Image 1 (cartoon, rainbow, N blue to C red):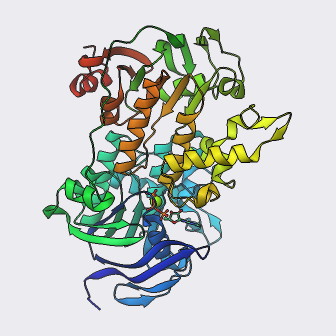
Image 2 (tube, protein in one colour):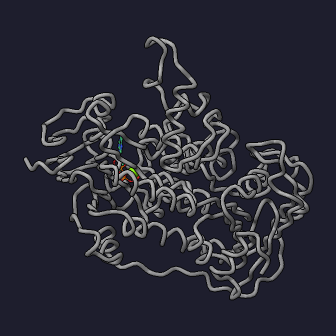
Image 3 (spheres, protein in one colour):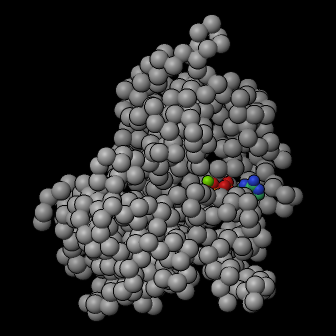
Length: 510
Ligand SMILES: Nc1ncnc2c1ncn2[C@@H]1O[C@H](COP(=O)(O)OP(=O)(O)OP(=O)(O)O)[C@@H](O)[C@H]1O
Ligand SMILES: [Mg+2]
């Protein structure tokens, strides 16, 4: 056993339900003190492998060595005791506990080993927050907080337990570009302080920036381990998806004004702080066959805009029309059915899928009582199955068991692909899209982008909110930039470029 290895996984195989081979004879070696990236397509087996290392699953067979010692890791508590911490792809915070309590849960500072010493606990967390520049309001609860704050809390939770080996499962998928920079600094700081890091990400630039080694998984097997400095992005892409990628781009043509969505002088309160307005007198139109993107730093009113259009939040002032109908007071479900709206939500677990239902059912959620799937109150199960399976297949949802897989059991990226497929394929006039490719692999992003452009070409009106500037650049006919709830300006067609958007995001008029 080589002494410089923090982790060695040997011949790890994980078979779910006696048939799904998520990991197949995987060998992984992680050196002490390195940042080791694990990459691969959605469903390749990354999260499963790390869940095994963290004691959440017992592998069907295989061995694990931590610091050269053979270990059977039967639970996360055992993993913690071995110095392993993990930040999960899907948050495991308790919604109704304040962050400080979530972060310290089970390891709080106490009086006499019994009573939780809140101020000491908060003090310890605050020290970590300052040290790694990870700021959140510790008294707030996850339920009232942004996705990014929740992710930070998860990171703090791992740091709080002072683990030597830290596993990060797609920590940057939910962070904004600005926050990602900060997070990568955190990783580098952790490495400097001697920790060993496993980092799962779909973003090649991040790997190039911080990782020493990258192991590529495909279909549950190791393709290869690369020394990052000697490998270029194309080589990684080729290893992951087994082919060259195309460059998808919207070719702008003048759009005839046939307005589907009209937002007039909209003011909305900030969803985390009802004392301030998140959107101020905001107006916007989206026409048939047009993709309008909202660009801006997260928290500048994007979420509130989407939530009021889809009916999740209240309007303070202003009007929203869809196909010339005022919808201010229309229920959420009617917006989907009668007013022909689709919505790809920001949080796929809260608003996207019924996790304990199978995929086929999830594909017809909003439309089950339409005459496409029901007749006089009787559901046409054949029609439902046929339709559900078609989408699952078209959108390449991996390991879907012909659509009968339970949504919860899919990998994160495959859940996302299913939601995107459902919403793009629905018979709608308007699609509200929030961060559609969050957590998707590069091959899937290419496909989803081409489908969004297809939807536009078929005449749908599309409102896209994305924090990925590359996505905004690839897809938009028009870009509207938001800053502090105000529209800074907009760019059309050939005017759209990254420098202008960047300046406008900081509030400058161009
Ligand atoms: N609890 C489970 N029961 C059944 N199948 C599962 C379970 N967990 C994972 N799988 C299957 O194992 C495969 C690997 O999933 P995993 O979550 O490890 O992928 P991943 O590489 O992390 O993908 P992503 O990039 O989308 O997060 C998937 O196809 C998934 O459907
Ligand atoms: Mg995963």
